[in-house]
Image (tube, rainbow, N blue to C red; front, top):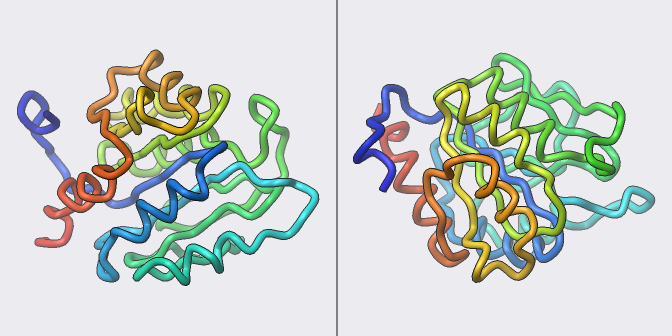
Length: 201
C-alpha cells in the first residue's frame, strides 16, 4: 500500500487522469464520487472525436459535485474543479497551474495525449503529481507515467482485469511499478485519501 514503503515528503498539488475507450462511464463514476471541496485541481485527457465538438464536460458537470469544464488556454487550474482537454488539443500544465492548449503533433496517433499531460505534470509538480489511468485501448499514458515515477510522483491505475478496456491500464502497469491498482469503484476513494494531507495544510 502506498505510504507504507514510500512515505510522502510533500502533499499532492494536482491530479491528472487519462482514459480512452469506456472512459465516459469511468469518469462519471470517479468524478461523481468526489466531494465539491476536493483540495486540488483535476486535469483530464479523454480521447475524443477530433472533428466534432463535445458535450462531455457538460455531462460530467451535471453528474458531479465538482465544477467540470473544457480547459481554456491560459486559465489557472483551481481546486474543486476538473478541466477536460478539448477535442484535437493537447492539454498541458505550466508552472503556477496555468493550462496550455496545444495543437502540436499527435503522440502515439492521438491528440489530446495522456502522455503529454502526464509529462507536463511531472515536470511542473515532481513528487507532488498524482496521475491516474483508467480504461482505454492502446498505450497512451505509459510513457508519461514513467516521467511521473522518475520525478517521485504517484501513479494509480484501474485494475486491468476489471477495466472495460484493459489496454491503457495494462500498458502503464507494464511500464512502471504502479503505486495503486484498484477496481473502478475504489478509485475516487483512493484519490480522496491520497489528497487528505493537502486538505489539512
